[in-house]
Length: 101
Image (cartoon, one colour):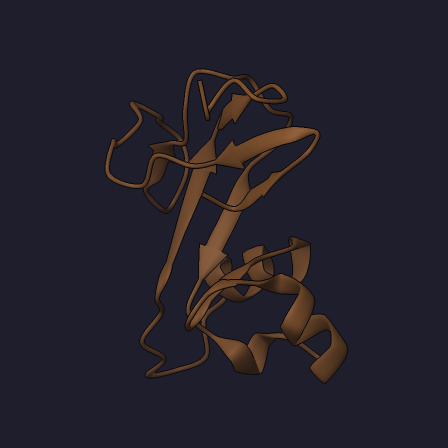
């Protein structure tokens, strides 16, 4: 669960691999709802430039939403880097009150 409030809820399924070819990294199916582009979760606080952004992007302890710069870091890792990330296509979403029901 990434967001939950009066306008609904938004999350990702994190353990279902997608059948995607032509990419140099694995992609997961985040859920049945279509989304443009890819969503990124990662475990690298050093990839976030400012403390304000760090708080905004943290979705759980040590887990952060990524952006285009994170995708560049994944695609061009520093030598010897151990990367912790998942890329998702699609998401899971619920309308107001739907998840509670």
